[in-house]
Image (cartoon, rainbow, N blue to C red; front, side, top):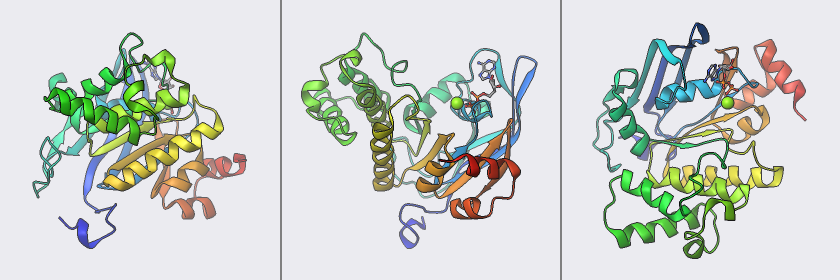
Length: 281
Ligand code: ADP
Ligand code: MG
């Protein structure tokens, strides 16, 4: 591993490699050949207006394409070899082709390789299950067995995700939390799996502006501390440039531009990127 000799949060080793990804829903093609790489420890943003295909890219990566959605061409490779399933370094890369994995394999990937912080904190929690139990489920999916250790870790993770009085609040139900607090529960659940990659799909768009900033700060400090890679989906180019090492601009199911955030902001190459910059507040 070269991570010690470089930026500790960005080891420069390829983690996720998406090539020529085509996705259709029924007869309608919505991704037309997307190429996307994320290095270990890198923070990458995907920016683009609603409907451009951002969520479809990550649904394909996670094996969660809804309805008639399917990958019709291309490859999605994840390096699962550089760490074992408990997250310990093994020292060599080994890529798995996710488009060829059975559902059981994709559950393993979602269980301990890629953590998703979804857009809407109200639809992604089980309303009839105490939130602590939902974090505990994620820990068990990651292989933890000892009940006391799980309980302690639940409180730790909820606290890290910024939930005050976590021990008491672990016994409450989702409806007893505000939108911002529910989003933090989803962050705790994502962290419970100690993933190599966290994908956050517009994690703040359901929240008011001040809560958005707090949530983003939180995700950022957590991935920085852990050296976890981040794939951050947003329609806001300013937020993306602020928080990520690289920005990818999508339009109509294709990547139109990608690069260093400052370079994109000061010298955009594509007309659509210039429109995004002009539209920014
Ligand atoms: P974004 O996340 O950038 O807003 P999406 O990936 O959600 O964009 O959508 C890309 C395109 O795919 C849109 O035209 C959308 O209507 C279509 N789409 C997304 N999900 C489905 C689905 N389950 N069934 C049919 N079409 C879908
Ligand atoms: Mg979306």
